[in-house]
Length: 473
Image (cartoon, rainbow, N blue to C red; front, side, top):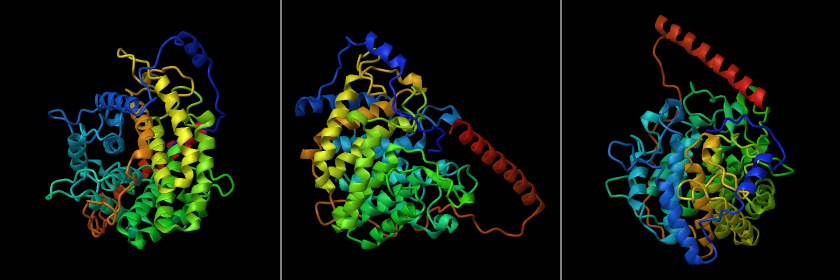
């Protein structure tokens, strides 16, 4: 998913934004969050507009995914972003009670489960990352926690799907001895980026484990989650002083060449996992970790109380397709943290509100006059085309921000003992694809030729990746 090329820079307001502010100062926002009814109305409109980007419910199109992927010239979006969108609509139903999109979500979530019901469909396996699979797993876990309507009895259930993702990622083949542990970014060993162990892949595994522990009451999930946290801490992907969360490192450097780029979703998915473990264990160590990550996240990614993607947003057009949807996940995950760790609410809720106010203020674009952009701090609409996207990520962000203001009156995540309705399967995914190289027979001349070609391609890929990161870092 992320192999970033963007460097640190202090937040700035560009001259372009200032000129735009003068030009559009008289444009009024189309959304309001003044009352509960205003929030519901705004969220409903935003949910409708977001669904306009989705083609999966149309005849002949593929359920569950946004148009893409870009590298096949099929659209702007990658496979994992469909899973993130499904999760957004699961939360939308939970917060608003509007079931208009539940059938679309059900169809999409089940269509993408793959042949082994572990969110590893064969047509995506060749480019599959642990983080990609993890996002679909987190959406399945969310469906179980939110008591989203269950699938038909002859189809895999939400909890079992989350367990399947976790089991495939818990397999020893995904946790080698390089860097003393941790999962790699990519699953197939031939993928560019297989030599990179990054935070988001391990953080998704940590997050799902924390949530499975709380939902099922099975402490073995929590033990593995804690091992993952300990590994992230030991390789210094989490800064021991500032609590900033860095992106990752390469196995050929024993993960010591840390890419110190910071992305909001890395910090937020870890924070959410820590909050789940605090709620499950009431162990002071998890409260300490929540209280370490939270101020660091807010200081870095909510300057002046408005969501800001620190490592790309200083210049319009620098954010990658992935980064353009991070704000929505962070709003959703922070909202849930207030339920799991109520001592955070007084810190989080004012920030979520001020950030949402800024978000809706710039939704003045397009023929409708209500299209949303990505740049919230400037207060003016910037067309998504500036970032070479059609705008689904930007729309997802603002919908997430608006609807999560309803979190104070929403039910907290359910557990099996406290209202949960989803059936699990502790052995789900055990026989699924792990990414480990299969056993082979005797090596033939053809095998040697193929291996030589593959080696050349991998070397070239590694060199180009190094140049890419060096030139733009």
